[in-house]
Amino acid sequence: MTTAIYLKPVYNGAQEIFDKIDDDSLDEVIELAKEYDINNNNVRIPSRQHDTIERLKKRLTLEHYDWTTI
Image 1: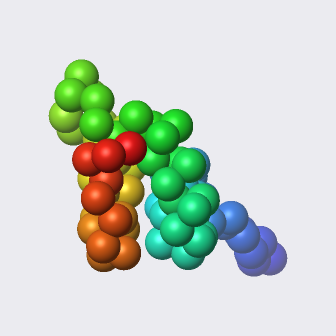
Image 2: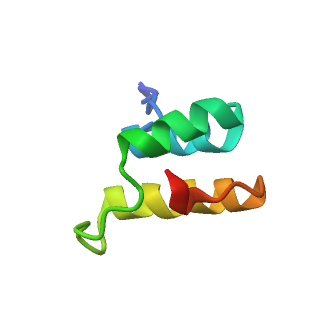
Image 3: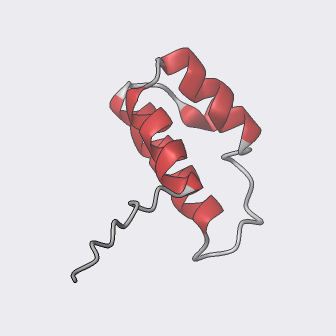
């Protein structure tokens, strides 16, 4: 007898944040950037927080928004 094993895909918190950065409105991304304090220089590299901040900066740059003013 064969038993099927169903594996649930892993969906971690980082991917959820990345999806928000990619898909949400600019106003929501700006609020998220404020929460992450994207101009903070005390972020450990590499880290999930650093990756998130870099992705926020990239999205804001694509939107022609000066993220250094946040």
